[in-house]
Length: 260
Image 1 (spheres, rainbow, N blue to C red):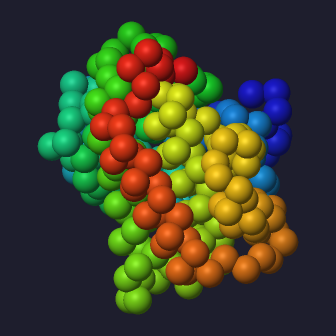
Image 2: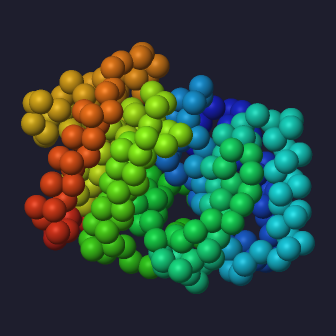
């Protein structure tokens, strides 16, 4: 946590303490992951990503109390609004029928399933435990098949947004850069069986992918760093098609690859 900006570190400590007080014995642990733990956090725009694991579903009273605390905290601490936090049940992790909660954009709502081994692989690789036991002690094993299926889903999500004229995201420059860099990360994970940050995946892609894609990736990196660059939708759609072909050419990550 030494590289985390002091206001963010204070926010995380306050959040972890509040979760302990509100959830009490229902709390299993709090786990930080993403750009903060991968050394790529940008104080001007990056999310604060964390997972909260509980034993049981929240009671209406605990849910109201947590919503109230988050709302009050956000009024005095703008970093709370940058928190993206999932609450998940310990006994149903990595299952498609799981229901949990998601705190995002200042609102705590019911969320869908937790069949996302990509996030958990991120936690295992570089995550920081803010409270509770190490995730390895309770997380089900992430297989190469699970990872592959998650990568296919991620490409599908990107295709849906980029190709749908009604999408609220595809017209936003930051999302176009996000899509290209996420595709780089998907391809890295498919080839290596590991999950890394988007900047690291982009550096790998510039070495490993065919030259015609390099200008698109460089533009995405530049845009992600705050320098506007042309990121045309047809070009991104073609990169999605390229990624889909790469996944289809091999139905799972390298069998010897391990989740880092």
